[in-house]
Each structure stands twice: as structure tokens, then as C-alpha cells.
Length: 197
Image (cartoon, rainbow, N blue to C red; front, side):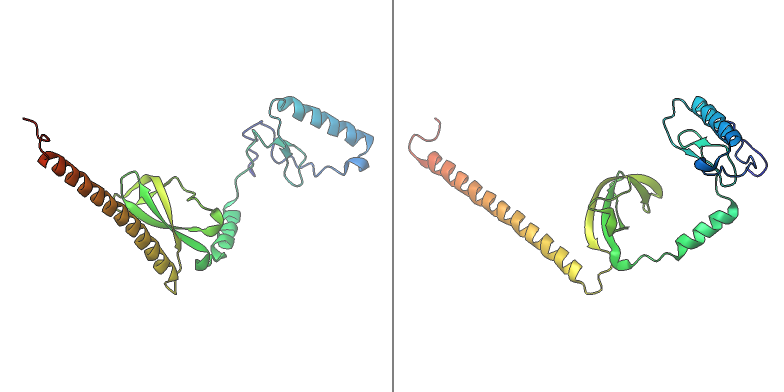
């Protein structure tokens, strides 16, 4: 950009050095005519974009939000942003643990901020067992990642125990029903005329 490369979308200069436009009500007649010409040229260049426009401070050339990518950050700006983001502290009590079943059938545990809602936000993640990036097939929220009191673990175990008891109860009922069926078939078989001859 500083070397004078034009916009990758429309070919217009990014830095024209003409300064900002004054407020519209304060434009002189010459400036207003120049502004209207620039506006007409912009509309002709971007007739099908139907998007807003942007320009750099101190420069008058307008660029389209749809087809004119803004210039990338400088190395200094990227370092400043990285420094700001790295100083942001995520409280461990705001993280939830998730068990993810991957396309390789391995299950991995990941954490995600609770503000992301009731679904895991990533569609792929790294599998430490395979050493490859895999798709997420299912995601089950385990609970808060930070559980100093152990209450979440106890609640999880209680829920698993209740689920296991329900499953056992169904299996017991199925066994009793099968025992009744066997007894009924045995009784019919032992009745006179019950067995085929």
C-alpha cells in the first residue's frame, strides 16, 4: 500500500494524498462538482455490488465493501493486536468441557467458553491419537471445565447412575417377560395334545 500498489478490487489508488472530504454542507461549488464526479465514478465501477464504501483517513478515493478488500495490517499493527489479545484473560470458571467424538471414532475433550451456547462451535479438531485433523461427529457437553468442589463430577456420575438404573430396569422387565413367555411355551408343550405328533 505504501509503495503505491492500487486496490486489488477496483484498481483505484489506496493512498491518493488528497486529504479528507470536508463535510458535505461545507463543500465549495468546485469541491461539490468534484465530489459528485467521484461519486458517479464509484457508482459506475460498483453498479452491481450493492454494498457500502470505505476509504482511508486522509484520502478521498472510495472503495467497495463487497469487492475491494481492505489492506492488511502492518507488522507493527499485527503485533499490537496480538499483544492486546494475549493479555485478555479467560476465567476458567467460564469454560465448559466437551467430549467430542471424531470421525476416527476417538473421543477427545475440549473446552469452550460458555457464551457459545449449547452446541460446540467447531466442526473439526486435531486428534492427538491419530495426529490428524478430524471432523466432529458428536459433541456432548460435560459441564464446567473448572470444578474445584467436585460437584459437577458428582452430578455427572449421579446422572450416569440414574441412566444405568433405568436401563437395568428395562432389561429386568425384558427378562421377566421372556421368562413368562418360556413358561407359557413350556406349559403349552406339556399339555396333552400340545406337542406336534
